[in-house]
Length: 352
Image (cartoon, rainbow, N blue to C red; front, side, top):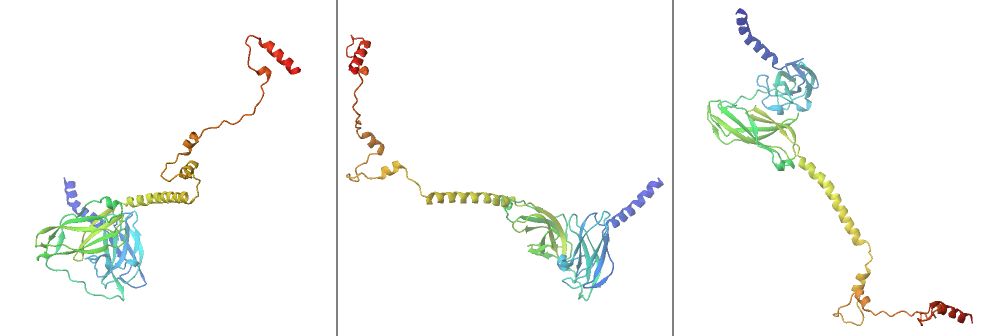
């Protein structure tokens, strides 16, 4: 009984310690460095074998993260690193000035898989420092339900048309003032590249303590394919991110494959037709005879065909040389005389 009570009392603290241990952390070898130097970034508690991106970002503090997204970071000097089997990493990061003033942080976030991020305060020596913008007071929107992408790709998308979806989510006004016609930023990113942001205004008013269903269109470029991430930002804070896997437009590949087969075949047929036209041919004799006019007849008189004319002409028997038949081949003139007697008399006549 006492053991069970101890387990019940210790379990919440153990769970909290496990959650704290699972939260990713970032540590720096130094808190300040100038441009051209470097800082060693270490971390633990990350997902094993996770691919991470390490950046220096301005106008940020660890408690607020990176409100401006990666647009406020020195993306050109960022470094990628892969966590080991325990979720730890170590990486040298060159110091570069971000595009916005400090306060700055070293921002580490996952590139693939579940989203996770952590920040550590860092000062870029010689870079300008300005106060952080004050958070907007009054109306504030917060995500109430999980967002989702709706819609499907049609037949034209299979042939390279721009893929399109709708981002649907429910937000609530947790402030004290109404929010009228809120302006959202919808970003689409492909792989490790920074999001491409587009401002979209939702028409309507959300009263304090009320919620609204927001639907925003999301479009990609023609022929886009692969794994994308759709992000929604409001008031400098990212509300939600949704993965979007776009299939390859195989119709375009099929079209070019058919074109590579049809065009050579058509050119070959055209070439053979031209050769048949240009090459001199021999006209059939019957065709020449039918096209020739017979002399002495007017044009309106029908002409007989060569075969008919050949049959119509009378045949004259060819003269045969006169030969004298031999006596023994002469026909029987007297049937009463035997053949042997006629032959013997014919020999006697020849001998004489």
